[in-house]
Length: 280
Image 1 (cartoon, rainbow, N blue to C red):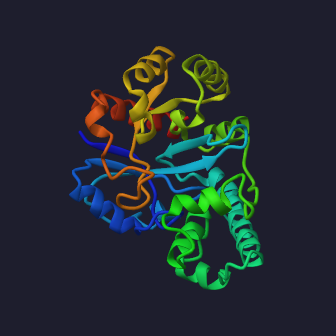
Image 2 (image 1 turned 90 degrees about the horizontal axis):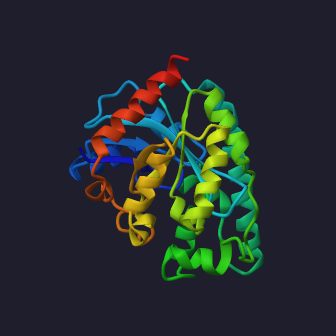
């Protein structure tokens, strides 16, 4: 089995439409995937009722305010009614935030027309869209420079966004029938002991899984984290965090599956948990 349970489309900050992403994943050998757009279910919703080359799980990814780079993935096979109201509010706030960042860039002499950018992005604008626009304008040589120079958390054009706390997000996911999974723990930049302490707290609040097989974990190795989270009783997941082909920051479809020896059993465990959440 070659799963990829963390992928982004034009529903948030990916470059491919949901249909294009499914086709690319299938060509890349992925056998089951999840669309996990930021603060949105629009991408995966657009596929409902249509045949797809491979199974597509419903997912989303929330940014959490408690720590830098703390994100929470959620998976569901229900209608996610309770989640949709909150996601709509967060998506609207992301647009206001993006407009404010563009205004700051305009004040720095970088001319970006927000309305034109919004139209090109299909109505969804986030920091990655702004980074790609800066690249298109020749202000930077690669998108990471946009974050380093302008729109990263310490940058002159950065604007803080609305984010839920971990406790709020976990409660929301549990109430809405989602299986909550900690995304890319390596990006938290904490040692194993500190991570274990955090995981214990979050498990008590409703966390059910950890994304062990993410590209950011590769340099640290997967085995120790895998053993730790299984010992703590968590589901194990993995994915490429795909946004764009070979973008230098995220992975390509299915890239972590080769390092995931128990992928089939782990996906089955996730699907079983999804069934339990829907039937509660």
